[in-house]
Image (cartoon, rainbow, N blue to C red; front, side, top):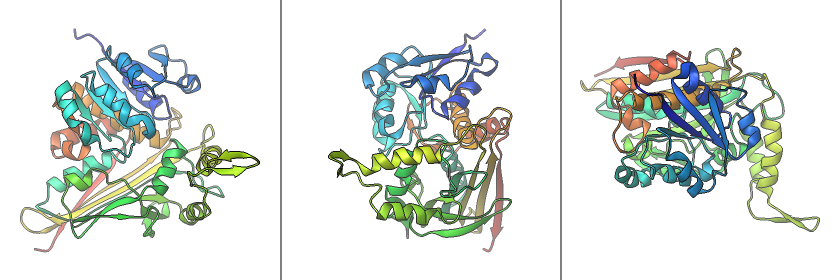
Length: 385
């Protein structure tokens, strides 16, 4: 009988809990979760099958020492320290699934991963993650891609003023979406546009009208898929964009210190503090995740083909796990199981869009998600000649 494999998850945030519970279920894996915050570790609850370790994961040498004794590694740290953490993890030469959302390019670590014989699947959450996996699969079915559009958002089920928004992950990472310039592709060339720009209203069945704006979520899709037009837009309830733009215009996102009562404060730090309190989900508050992916182009017979993927997922009342945590965390654990199954073990840094070119990989991951009641609806339309 094969011995139980060990997994360590770096980061005990809201996504860390569902990943740990999912992997530890039925003693499938021996799971350890590490975090600097004891409160975050305590939030995992009293599960004897999950080991908890309090460590400063901002220290690369601490990470390198920790991970060397585990079979599989998951990086779920904040984007600010995620890239350096991944570099330390790769040096251990172990299989890794990474969901840390950092501004650096994970491809920069490809040579290190090959030298270390480490199979790394990066950006493997819901978006980026499933958005890229399904885009990659759809693109592989076409000879030419006219447009690739991704619309995605995590929202509170109940709208409450003033923000009509709550975050299941760090407000700092949300603000990053609102401030980091967005990469798009127009006429086959990469262009940069201001975040929150080019707002549009889109109707979604059962939810209603949402507003969408440019955000920097395409990431490696701009390198790995050739298309005439490509964009990722974040979804919010109508009116949210104008409120964020007002904060931005008034300087609340500035990083230059300002003097207040004889002390220097950084406006962005103050804003994060306020928004963390306003955007935090209270116990039992429900959320939803909505995503629409459209990939349109010419098929192998030179007919226009459109692939559309739709996701609408809700808070799980039975487990108390938020939808964004479910859709992100279970995508990551599905990728880890893909590696564990032996279907994908190639050394190097791999992005979901590349893994998605293989239909067996896509079906494996979708099946694991469906087992957890997360369903991606796929529609194909063909017309013209």
